Length: 123
Ligand SMILES: Nc1nc2c(ncn2[C@@H]2O[C@H](COP(=O)(O)OP(=O)(O)OP(=O)(O)O)[C@@H](O)[C@H]2O)c(=O)[nH]1
Image 1 (cartoon, rainbow, N blue to C red):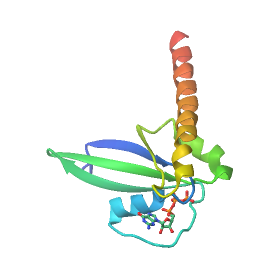
Image 2: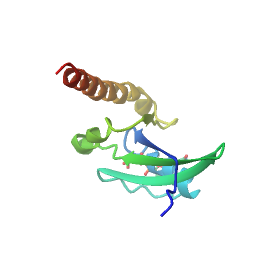
Image 3: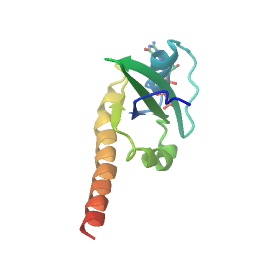
Image 4: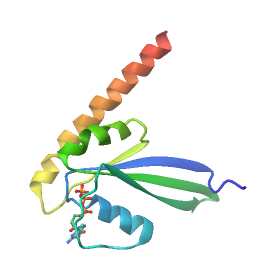
């Protein structure tokens, strides 16, 4: 069977609960908007394939739960992401202030991952 895409990008959505991560994703992949808020449990994902300059680009977007209790699960997805969107609600200053915390969580995991690979490289 022919490959359905040429390149794959794994992206991640992060931010407080209720800022609209799932809605952003539904709008991007299905052009839909659902006004009800059903909190994501752990992680979920959707895919979309775009053709850019004749190259089929598959975008896999992981939608994470903003609730603190799922952070052990969601942090496991940081390392494999090639790009991370930090999402906040423009009507919530608090969710904007929390962006710093989300960014430092990402740095922590990504730096640890870099340290680990440099150690493996040394061996
Ligand atoms: N007015 C307005 N409401 C929005 C917008 N985007 C999302 N919402 C509402 O915000 C609420 C939360 O949206 P979700 O996309 O479920 O939020 P989330 O960030 O995925 O939340 P968690 O899964 O709990 O992390 C829903 O009730 C949406 O209808 C927007 O652009 N405008």
